[in-house]
Image 1 (cartoon, one colour):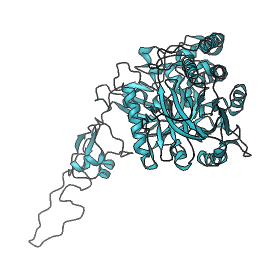
Image 2 (tube, one colour):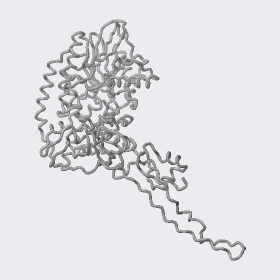
Image 3 (cartoon, helix red, strand yellow):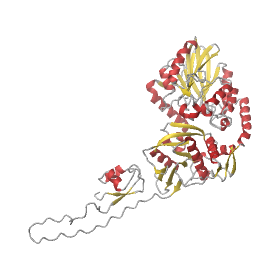
Image 4 (cartoon, one colour):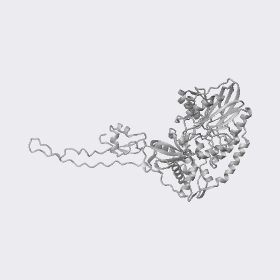
Length: 604
């Protein structure tokens, strides 16, 4: 229920954000449509979830849903809006070929490449496209000479109704996959391409469908909202990339119905169209989840194919990929409550593959240890079974600190969010209040600068707020570097026989107390000599009559509390933050911590 409420909230937020461009929730229309009835089933962002694992229905169930609709209406199409061939070991063990085999059996009619389709490199993506029994389409993926890598659209005739399917890929692919994977390519403005192609085919077809991997994130420049606002003549926009759940779709001022089916085969989208005399007379969208599909039988052929591929992969899982001279500790109670050598190794691996400043990954994502000796691919997958991806975020220093505070909030009790880190060191004070436990934080051997920006490598789970790392939600992913298991294998191979030991990146110790400096002893001033005559005598300059002004009286001390800043403290004691900074020799005025003792000016 909590997840569903989150999706509803996101939908309402999207409507509010984009209300000014004419996007609204689709109204339920009970009026019957006239003309021929066309059904379009659609998936997006399945990320190779071929096997059922609630709430993911898996490909056999999706195929069963398609079978049901085809039996009720032969005029049914099945389309995919991208990010299908990468994401789990079912796919990555064979570079996506397993997914192509299953999708061929399911009877898809078209797919648009999402950014993850490029994770094996554009050359292999073309090879995968050639293996498909259906076209891979994209109007805006182009070679440097301006020619397209794939056909831009498909015209499909269904019971005499001509349906034009135009495909668009997110330009974010250029930095949301490893740059090497898109060398020699450009991904052009999808809105500009859509304008050209809708004008080109509108008179040739009865229905215009855009199959887009663009998404609806407010942080994205090129979205489905932008396209439908600027390009009239689109009947349906089937969207992917942002993993958005649109239960009944959205409708633009141009009359375009926007549909999106979440992620991971958790939903199958259903769009019903009625076309009469070359015009769409009615259109509506809905989603089907595992609850609504509980009585639908999985497709037996697809289920058998998925099972056979899993059996074929068993020898691959036995492939020897690395060697370790020591036990790599991934025990649940260890990685969720402290630094371990496997936690260090994994954090080092994702920092290495991304060339980031620092790395953080949640201890709960590490699911097993690796025994000393030969390491198989299956061992690695057992450690990292979720198919998570390595991503980077450009994060402000204060949010790095907030992330660590979140991760150690329950320490020493185990927590899935406990941070395994690379490129930084810090200490935990268990006696301090939650939210003020982390101290002595260094990055690259230097004290954290809360105002600086650091490139952080993490996994795609924590990057979107998983394990309550919500401080990362506001940042746009700046790079994507493939699966974590692949990064770990590559790094272990680079090291040879792995012999990594914990090196004190994470310590438990009290927050250091800064002792105030002892005041200097004042030298008593000599008494002023009595004059021998009543005539006033000017005192000699070298004989002071009061304490030397540059020797302060004993300083007061203030103990920093949570929420304090130099500015707020200075206001309490009628001084300035600059004076406090200078008196306490503080290099960075933004960096003070609870329990720290600050000297106050004598006049305070």
